[in-house]
Length: 124
Image (cartoon, rainbow, N blue to C red; front, side):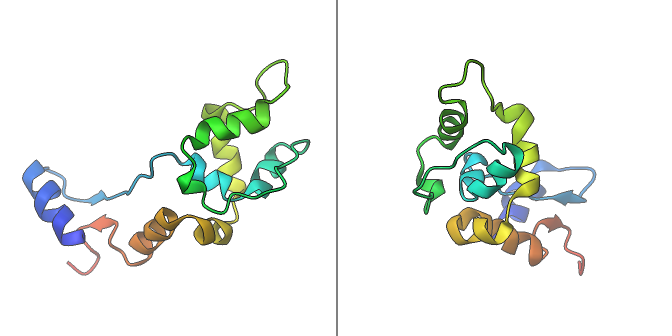
């Protein structure tokens, strides 16, 4: 994949500064948040997570709306706002738990750990 990204994107972009970082986005980062309900509880201590955990959160059709629904249910005003709260929740995530449930997160970790997220590679 690294070679395809370099040849199809980086080289053809004719960038002046070739020192860049390649990132792989997932459709909604909230899927990773759904993988670890305890992280939400740490930020929202009164939140009672569903009894059934999310075993495949990346299969959830709209994870952002799912979190909003869970946290804002029966509240007079919204408790959760992704623009403010995702950063706080992500800081609490158990990354091993996210890896167990989210294949795209595993791919990201491997991409970074194998030094394929940087161009040029350290040895080039």
